[in-house]
Image (cartoon, rainbow, N blue to C red):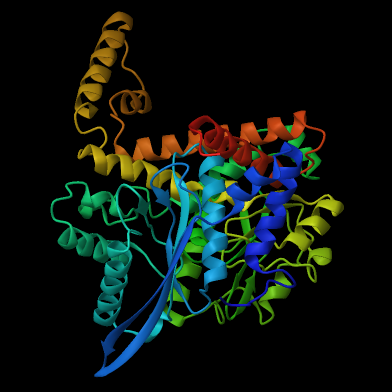
Length: 474
C-alpha cells in the first residue's frame, strides 16, 4: 500500500477523521462504528499485456467498502497516483455519498496505475479488457454486485470496452448492459450522464442560494448571478460546472487553475473557448486575453466568492487554508480538502459544501442508467407522444374557449413531451434539492453540528446504521 500523504494524514485517514466527527455526534456503539467504517473487501490484481512487442505488467485495485445495499457502486480511475489507500478512501466516500442522496447502492471504487497518455487507443483497449476480465472473474464486476463507472482518466470509451468484455464472459446474463454505467448512449447509456457531476455541482449551488439565511451566513448576498468563481481543474466535472454556472446562472469564472498554471480574467473567462484551447495546446498557458499565472496553486488563494476545486484530493491543506479568501467552497472533486484544512476553514467561518454531497450528481444519474438497463427500455418511450397529443388538446380547448391564439412559448411548453434528458435533469435537480434541505435542517436542529460536512455524514451514518440494525447484520 502506498504511503502517499495528503499533508500529514493519508487520504483514507483524512476521510475517516471527518467521519469520526459524525459518529461522535450520532453516538454509535464502537463496534457498529468500526463495521461501518471498515472496507468490506479489496482486491489487487497484476496482469501482463504485450505492448509494442514487450510485456508490461499493470497493477490495479477494486475496493468494496460496503454491501449494506447492492450493487456496490463507484468509478474506475486510470492515473499514476492510484494506490490502494486512495481506492479505499474513495470507496468509503461512495458509500456515504450514496446514502446522503438516497441512492440505494453500497460504495466501491477501482483504479489502475497507468498513464493513459502513453498508450495508443488499441493498447488502452487491450489493457482495459484484461483489467475487466480480472475484476469480473473475481466477483468485482457484475450488474448485481459491483458496478463501475467512469472516473479520472476513463470515460464512455472504457465503459464500452468493459461492457463488451463482460457480455462475452457471461452471455447468459441478459442484464449485461447494467454491469457498468457511463456508457455511450447507443450501448445502453443514458442521456445526461457525461455532464451529470458538473450539473449536480450547479444544482447544489442553486439550492444553496435559494436559502437567503444560508447565503448571509457565508458572508454573501443575492443569487449566483455575478458571483466571482475560481475553478480548479477543467476536466469533465470542472468544465461542465463552470460552463453551466456561467452560461445559465450568470456567474463569472474569474480564474481557471490547471496543471500548467492558471489564467485569470476579472471580466469572466469564456469556458468553451478555454476548453478548446486546452485540447489544442495541452494547457492554459498562452490563452489570449487572460493573465497567465505560473503558480496555479497560489491562485486558489485569490479573492473570490466561490471556490470550486474540481480535480484532485488534498489541494486545500493546512498550509494554504489560512490564506483561502473564498467565502464559499463547493467541493466538486473527491477529497479536495484535508481534515486539518477543514478544521481551520470552519474556525474561520468559511462555508464548505462537502464533496460527498456536491459531486454526487454522477452516481445519481448512474443510478438512473442502471435502472434503465434493468428495465430494458428507454425512459419515456411509451408515453412521450401521448403527452404531446394531450397538450395539443389542451391548447385547442383553450383557444376555442377564449377565441384567442395562445403565445408561442405556451404552445411549445404544452406540446413538449418530456424526453429522457428532461427526466434525468429533473430527477437530478430534485435529488440535489432534497439532499441539501435535509443537510441544512439537520445542521439547524442539532447543536452539536456546526458545518455542512458533519451534517451530511451524520445523515449517511444514521441511514447505514439503521440498515445494519434492521437487517440484523450487526
